[in-house]
Length: 229
Image (cartoon, rainbow, N blue to C red; front, top):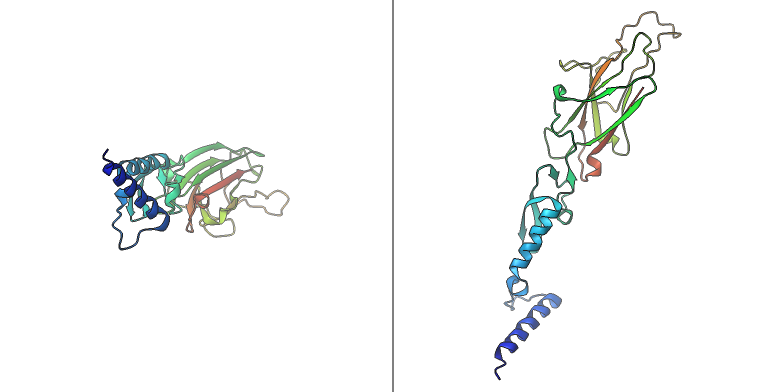
């Protein structure tokens, strides 16, 4: 009975187990494909890529990196093991005032909230919104307020405007409404001693959300804006 092939198989298996446990010395000639089945490794990599949104990756030795992500997904934290962990928000195409997402009317006592992400590494990612504060006279009722909220609020800024013609809303006491954390309009003419209402009621407000600091996680790329009146 010829047991040569059986012995060779056992010897090869012993080499693989020893290499996995003790490592491979320079004198050894055990190659990667001798330790692992390449087709199986490729299948595992492909399944990982499909499950984590990775479009392409590269490996050098035992280190793999993400080369590109599937559309709408991003590798924000630079960690290979969780793939492209951050997804674009639903406002991915509204990067201009003309295409601002309409949030509708906010009446006195009303409120709404909008959340999204400004993805790091994208030079064009910003989000535009429009909100209306209808009023039949002055004072207009309520206190129109647009504010960044939450733990990541300081990572972002607001730009506030009354239209898409390029001019920002002016503050009643001077200044332009850019790089804000909060916009608030108080119509306090009645009973305050003022006799002239020189600042227009903000019937329609466009606001733009931009990121002003580096984000190294998906949560740090996420913002929340509260709109109240």
